Length: 375
Image (tube, rainbow, N blue to C red; front, side, top):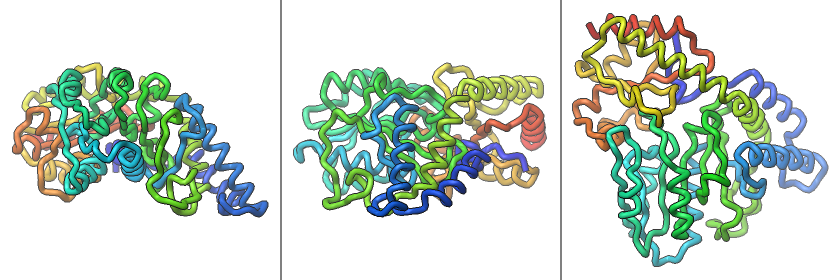
């Protein structure tokens, strides 16, 4: 099986596996316990907090470890809304956000919040003027992801962060798909909160982090909680965190090499498509610069994406029909609808995403098989 669904999840690296094993042996204690074994776990946890903060240019006090990107998104949004005036019931976001945010926004609407959605261009890139037009006196929060998991669009979050900081409006950005792939410096971006995940960068599943801008006065959502500076309840997974942070540092240090690798695979992909005259399919964001290079979105214009995905699976290729967290729903992708595609076209979508070990030969084999299935 040739795996081309790395935007959904990645296998654990050898370094991540070794780090987990070592931490499980040496730092298995509860980091909140007062005995020496707990103290050792606390030391390892604190070292991980410092390392992750250094990777993103932040402060260790702002790093809160979580169970993954979904919890990071929800924890960040909950904390922000708990920290603003109760009269502020307006939130601004996009139709491109991850399902963890989309679903939570639906829940917030039922609690009396009003959600405004920013317009985007045909690449899925936020129109900043539309964002500014959406802001109101009662705006509590703006939510814009850094990179889209379905079509790979990169948003101008540094510009957005600067504009919202001037207006004293909280800003949350989901960096799950971009962490380790782009240079994320929290001092430049100026967001209030950031969400990260381990399993997108060859670390373990069930581990992530949220970064809180330490200059902001937060109100925690659950009283009397002792773990993670009082932001999150539950025993901290020190081995998982050590594995995550070890892999994050290694991946981040090689990000330019990996980025170049993805660019080369992307160029080869489109070269092979052109060579085989696959002119009857539509590629999303094939030439834009504001694009994560390891993600390619495809509209077949012929068959449903789910059928093509299953046929490719039968031929030995693993791809997806969009975000793995949306699979099983019958509704078309809001991301695709928001950038101008019809419902019929949205159902004809598949996503191909490369990994750090994806080879050129695998790309050639995939395009050849795609050609055979669609011609």
